[in-house]
Image 1 (tube, rainbow over the protein chains, first blue to last red):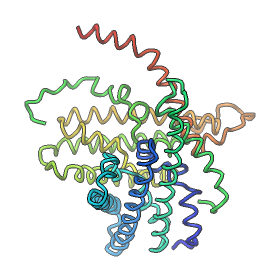
Image 2 (image 1 turned 90 degrees about the horizontal axis):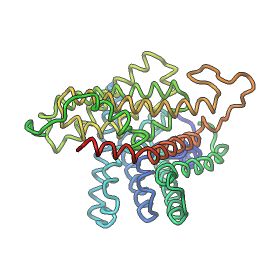
Image 3 (image 1 turned 60 degrees about the horizontal axis):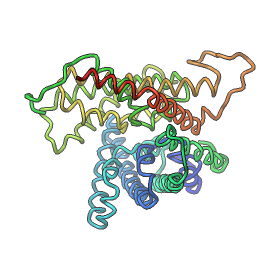
Image 4 (image 1 turned 120 degrees about the vertical axis):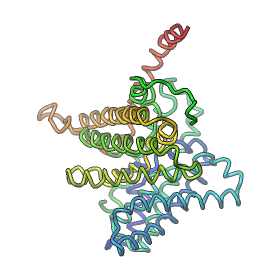
Length: 195
Length: 217
């Protein structure tokens, strides 16, 4: 059982081991949806919600599978749960905010293949977090993802006004930008203790 | 999807398009997470590429074989389960072969499940093609992915540790450029490769397009 305090877990997942900038998880939506500020934060929040729901479910599944000694089914069960959680979020978003639903478009169902979410479920299992620790971990990881997305979107909106050589436009520049941000996030390395 | 639909012949291009023209890493920008996360050495890059290729070929073959049996509404879920099964196999296989490698790749082996390349190939290619096409194309895409990873992994290892596949290259005086092994290095090196390739396309794209045009007539 992990003995880290809740604050350490939260700080670690939010800044020190930020899912995007130091663990390289969730890069596809990160590169895909970070073009506009006003779609980036809802996307972040939706991801955070899915993360939380699937983290809670993953905890229960892991407990159940350990009891019946079927651990090798863990991966398959996790991914099935995540897919259903995404469906849930999708349906509720469609009902409560159709405009947002349209703005997120294809990226909403693609949350299923967002490795950050499966990552949360796998890491909390590997680190043997208890229930409360898992919840804090998933919320902080989601917040970290949202933070990365919003930061990146702000930078990219500014970049549209800059004159960039034609070769460097698009993905190459975005990756350089992400590298610079990642370098900045390394400054947090001393805060939360080693991984 | 109907059998009457005309299929392109199974030739070398089925394989090659995944390696070069639709290279998942350098052209399509798919599967970024494992691409950047495990490429801090050439060995890791190669292992990850091979594991992904295995899952690609295996799931491609199975999806192609089952393509008439799987109902359209639950196809994505079916594909995911197929992929997850192959990933579980790879996971235990690597654990059995080399514990050091297993520790180095960590959770990223299991995260192959959510590699968009694999689901993308299953949905866009394997589910509509016969077994031979699916396997050859998956092998091509897997090779392209491995090559892309190797490009990244070797540059990062050479700059960050002064070695390639664990062999020292520069002698004692070399001062390793550690940041290349750390997360920012992954972003920078991939960014540089994309720059190089978009420069190449810019400077060779036009004549080649014209040549193809003339060929076509």
